[in-house]
Image (tube, rainbow, N blue to C red; front, top):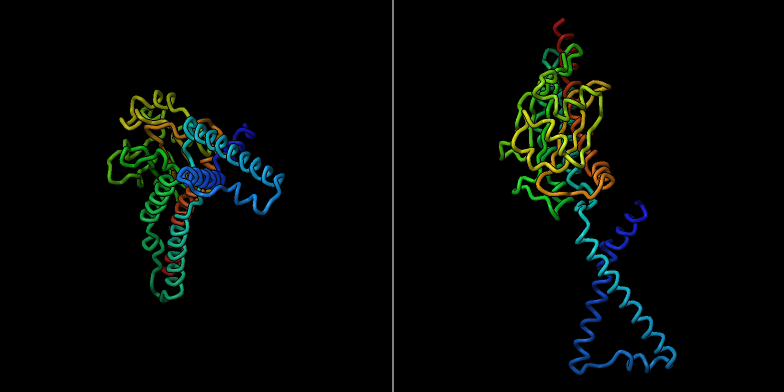
Length: 315
């Protein structure tokens, strides 16, 4: 399987394909010029090379052109029949996202240094947790549009992302028995089926997020979602009828759940096998999971710090 993937990547490599296209374009242009009475390359080369050299030049040229035609044909066949539509690209949008997060930390540092002895530190209010989570989700959606641009269309409702939190997860005594909605993508469409998910309610037992949290699993990846759709049929939104692939990630603080992150691929088969799907998740999606987890951890840390610092001042 790995040998086949390496062969496919070598054949369909963008630089490789571009060189072949240029060679074929030059050859095509030469034949058109020659047909119109233009000069012959072999006659031009014959002025500088011996007959043996000319013959070698012609044979090498025929080999190069034949190779380009054959490999370009194979590349076309692979691109046409390959079900996987993912392209590995650098997640450049992460740069902007990380910059915003760092600027926020800098603002917190300024607040701490400038706060008066009798004032209160307001970490949580200045954190903009919900805004930051939305920024990360929107950045992820933009990255997915770029990496799956051959087939993923937001207007066609091909992508759905949602984030849920465990309410008051900063409190070590919180029950952690329900999930509460934080944000989703596309926010312009009301596609959220459940604003709150009770982990002990039988209506939601088929949800992958519930199974992940109760089963202590870190993530759940489904190349085929038919079993999931049947299990969640009683309480699932109409959205799941077009679901093709699913990726769910538990957001944790230590070993405890603080939230959950869902990604749904709709209407189109984006990955040909589990290896393609897992590779896409590892290279393109997992960084965003860590960014979301960071926001949850930072929010919880600020809650506790604010409580301790302001409480100490009052004492």
